[in-house]
Image (cartoon, rainbow, N blue to C red):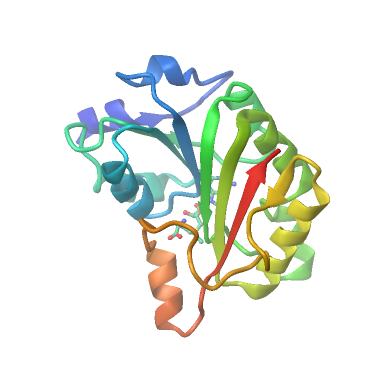
Amino acid sequence: MLEDRDFFVLENVEGFVEPAALFASVQPLYIEIGSGKGEFISQYPLQHPEWNFLGFEGREKRVRNILKKLSPQRQPNVRIVRLMVDANLAAVLPSESVSGVFIQHPDPWPKKRHHKRRLFQQDFLNALAEVMLLDAEVHVSTDHEEYANWIAEEFVRNPRFVSLQEPLIQASPSIQDHVSTWYETEQRRMGYAPNYMLFKRI
Ligand SMILES: C[S@@+](CC[C@H](N)C(=O)[O-])C[C@H]1O[C@@H](n2cnc3c(N)ncnc32)[C@H](O)[C@@H]1O
């Protein structure tokens, strides 16, 4: 288990993570921010061995949950970065290194006085735009309707992204091999449907 941690987890990251040096094969890089209990980052890469994946997760307890779902034999194309992501992303990943982004059920911080803690702010979107390749896509979902509208508005305000959906917020995921995360399953059980968004870096 400890050996698996050495294989998978990058922590105390200072400066750039060099994707080409991390993985056995140089392949397109996809990232997930807020990997939670690891459903997406353990299952989706099995369907896409032709891509490499970095899952960013800030909380140590969650990193340990994720590790229980990974093995170097089954998911050699996955690494986990233990880091709270914000605009710092542009100091962690090289410019134009990311082929696609997944962010499912980001913390909604529903109280107005906590809105400044929300991940989706212009400085984060600018950093995301910096690390993404042109035409790369960002998949976002949240069951929190007010946060969904907030996220859509932040993307619309940013000239480096365009929505690939009309209307911007849809009731179904944009990909066929969508992985239902723990939060999605829980929230559905409680009667809250996800809102799915899809944006392209321009
Ligand atoms: C509401 S949970 C959703 C987890 C998972 N995506 C899902 O859908 O089940 C949010 C997760 O993102 C992590 N997280 C929140 N903000 C983050 C950030 N800025 N950078 C990295 N991880 C973050 C939290 O620790 C938590 O595990």
